Image 1 (cartoon, one colour):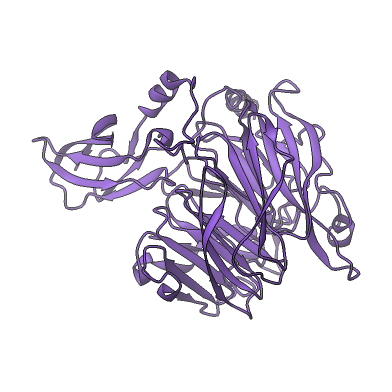
Image 2 (tube, helix red, strand yellow):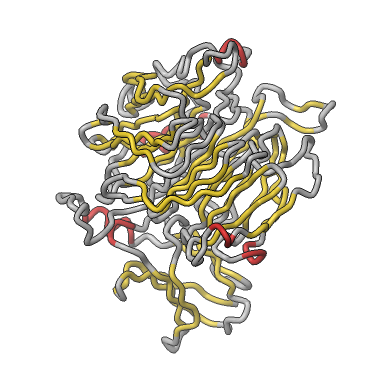
Length: 507
């Protein structure tokens, strides 16, 4: 136990080194009723489910961490994919599973005693209502941006009335972390339940957009090295929709923004990463749907919309995007133990989309090949068994989106390019030797320099496999069953220049 504690401490201290991270979202935590243990009535364990994408395929474990999760959850890893901190929207714990100083009472307000049995025993309930991004001015500090529920005028109905910010400094308290301030009001209005951000075209700053309910207006603010701007701007575009239960998403390449409003419909926009402006609105109605999730494929071509019993796919490259709507999944009636419906969705580092059920179910649905059109996307219902019930999927932006090179907004200078270049050379491949497949781990790629491709050559220098690598993913699984026995060289290239290389043997 002491050796394990020392190991965790070394990992945790290493997390505070100032390195440009590429694996921030490699550890997913969810779960429900963490203290429950095994329940003979239900026939399964309660607790925390941990998905670790540092492994391929991802590993799945159950842990009895003190923190309980509801639908509000995110986590943050260091550059090597080691857990730095995580939160359930009510408090924050560090990589040693200690409650971070001054992190208690996040989102404190009327919803806590109304819904929850205690500040430390339950989690917050806004689906994907929190995320974390590094402070552009200080790599040891992190902004947690979270939606806050408050009572509306109609008695005890809770609606999202505020976007709050909390600042965490992991260099404080002997590197155990301390919250500098919490629950600072950023946007106060009737707005989206979820929180989503997108990298500015300079590759460092962040845009925060959120929809004002019952209107066609969107609030916008910039998070930069100067802090979180208090100069809110509002853009009104497209059609107005009623409803305060909503979910939104940016495409991985930052060119699209989609928002779904329960009992309203879906809006899709072009997004300008320089100005933060929306344009070219598209709208389609879904008047009878409330449970929902939206997620783009890694190549940004396909948008997926999950609605209770149906999963739709839209093709962003189609001449008529809305007419391209294709039903790629229909609920099969499975209970696990409740109806395993289609709820919130999140694109993962392995290039797959994971969809929660919204209930305390012990399964996730997975879109195995989201870059493929129609049924070729391979939607697999309840295909991932979880060791404990989960109410949702964590919330992450695309941390790996770099600068929009050659654009007027690609203006940053003075970055530590030597450090980035050396880190980018790290390329892992396994299993080695291989039989039927190999997995390429390119999670340290510096996307601010542009897109990359994969090339595999045999011992004669002949190319046996070549492809463009998806920007959002950190892994790529390659079929090698047809490869002849021998030694192969793997190259990661950008603009036909070798970025990283390694070898593997095929048995």
